[in-house]
Image 1: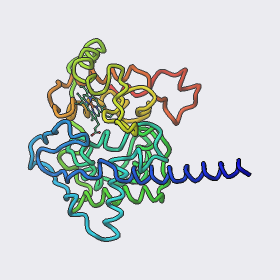
Image 2 (image 1 turned 180 degrees about the vertical axis):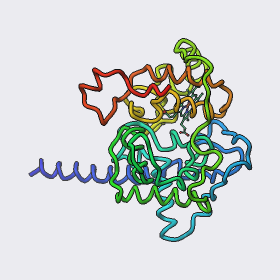
Image 3 (image 1 turned 120 degrees about the vertical axis):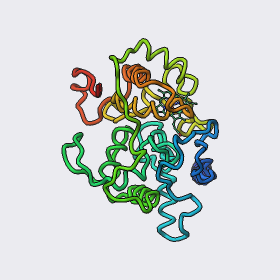
Image 4 (image 1 turned 90 degrees about the vertical axis):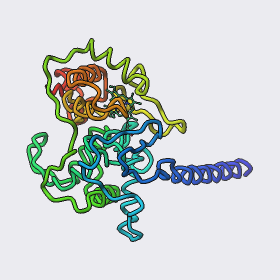
Amino acid sequence: MQNSFIKVLISLSLILGLCTSVTANEIDALEVRPSLVEPVVSIPTHLVAVPVVNPGEYYLPPRYDDIPDTEYGDIVRWGRKIFINTQVHGKRYVGNGLNCTSFHLNEGRQPHASPMWAAYGMYPMFRTKSNKVVQMTQRIQSCFKYSMNGIAPTVDAPEMDALITYMHWLSKDVPIGVALPGRGFAGIKKTRDPSTINGEIMYKTQCAMCHGTNGQGQKNTNNVGYMFPPLWGVDTFNRKAGMNKIKTCAQFVKANMPLGAGYTLSDDEALDVCYYIWIHDKPEDSDASMLSNNLSPKRGTGR
Ligand code: HEC
């Protein structure tokens, strides 16, 4: 009798504990960020200002404060939450420590960091990766499977609706089928083969202070997700992610890294450091079998 009373007490406190932690999660620090549309914007951590190259040259998405006070607006706000804090709001689909904003900087607004407003109007799109026409929903499924090393939400999942709605709102007045300036990442041209030796030097001097000497990143103080995301190891993107291609990685790094100092590395330096990131272990290609993952040469050289 006494025992079961104690059990009830324990389960009650567990339930209460769960409820409070859910509430605590909901008031998340990212939520209170101001809208980010000025030429100089702050990143989630407020540590560094990210200057937009050539302000005025790029499409300017609507401001956070302009999200309408309607049911559509509620879904936009929810989609934004999933986008900037996937660790909490999209957790059931995520297998690593990243958020959508680990790649799509500044809430998916940053030119040359694969901004959502430049992607939205380009779908449906023919992709050589899958050799067929894919819709935005299917593209997002790939992000979850590879970049987030997780599982794909179904195309009618509520989170999927919310993400698409957020992108739709960010892309207000954007023309359909037009490749806008700032789309994707920066262009890159190599003048020699990449070198891991130089890559290691670049990494240690320009990246390790944030991403860690071992590429492990730095966790947030509340231990949910990362302040500086990992670049290799178990908690990062997998071998089938775009970022695992040395070239794609270099295009991203050239325009955006070191954070706040984009366009400071040369094309060759960006390729070197990405080659160095590439040679380190990360989760394997989630589509391939264990055998082929272990026996076949690593994919994704992309050179
Ligand atoms: C001042 C800190 C800082 C420095 C220095 C820095 N980064 Fe980052 N990096 C970040 C942050 C923060 C993010 C995620 C963006 C966000 O959350 O807003 C990121 C994201 C990334 C990503 C995509 C996310 C991931 O986990 O793969 C790559 C790749 C990357 N950085 C590579 C580099 C490379 C290469 C260098 C060195 C040339 C570098 N970074 C230097 C802070 C930094």
